Image 1 (cartoon, rainbow, N blue to C red):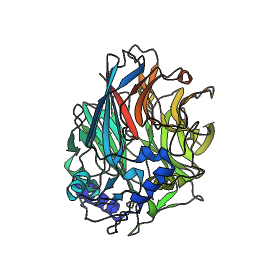
Image 2: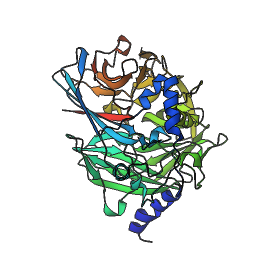
Image 3: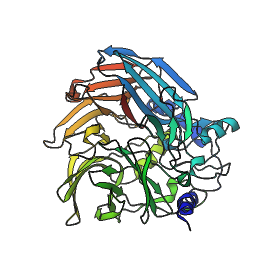
Image 4: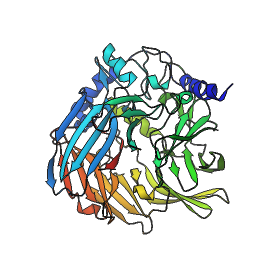
Length: 491
């Protein structure tokens, strides 16, 4: 088989087999969510929207920094329902890209649905058509994974372009000014529809590194996009039982992957999520890949845990130091599905934040616990792949059982925690460190949903004094759908 055929057909075939080819629709989630919403008003954050676009000027409370100028792009699932049916998992909603525009101490918000093949086909049909991560549904056959692409996980600006990203398929290009959908990004014809995952890393030279997991095929696609936006290198790494892989980290020389023991067992007439089985007797496998030639250099193991997000990694002699948020098991995925049905767990899962020491010479892994909670870790852009001192996260303090309730940082040298707690009537989204233009520190920027007033607020903190509370808040006159991830682009 020629390389072109292998990349363009063989890998996609493995992914297609992992998704059910036939199923029936189930409208039960639609009714149960509405019943649950009456009991648990905090579920309003997962109601979604039927609007194609949102636009509004925010009212500023406090003093918005005049020097904070640019666009804060975010992405998340926004449309969950059609014709009396509701998707069964939060990860399955159609993506909506948001842009918070900041200039002269003022903030404007705009948002627009990503007009993917899936979104347009279902809008025309007036009903849900395709399966998703946690939804068992298939009314129409699909050609490849981009037929199912919901473009709902991250918004990443790079080399003058903006991409809406989803784990299982291609990047979708978005106009950074109007947020109109430009279409699928194909880096090269023979690479069409290969996964380009939702957590790329951009290094100090402006190069973008990414991967694409191909469950069911035992292969991992590795990408390097040059600073000018051109394709630099792509390769396929054989990896047994790739299963669910959401994030990775980079150092100066390596790509680092943590593969949890959440194994795929393909089956028909069940969702992609339900084809996975948690295997606590098996370890997390840690793969260390050479950035120069995309070859596997080291393979290590550590005790079982579920992992979605990594913070940062850096080299320290023959060691790699790596931040990670680890769950005891994969139960959190079922809890998210329960939320979409209007149900809330009395004992929700939470992740512990750890600093891992990968000893490459000895092949061992040790763990230092930083926090008993924490998710959505971020570092300053200039620290990616390099030694960092502070990690910025969301915390569990003051949370309601649907989401996170605080913003915090942890000092990796002292262990000091600096935290601002919003309280039980708030749902806090990922906050992103943004460098001040004068080089004197960072802001921390991110939205939160005010449940009491049913409005979305954009917060800006002094990243060195988070516990002092927001420097300012930009409040919208409406509720915007919750997002997953985003990035700031300075003006």
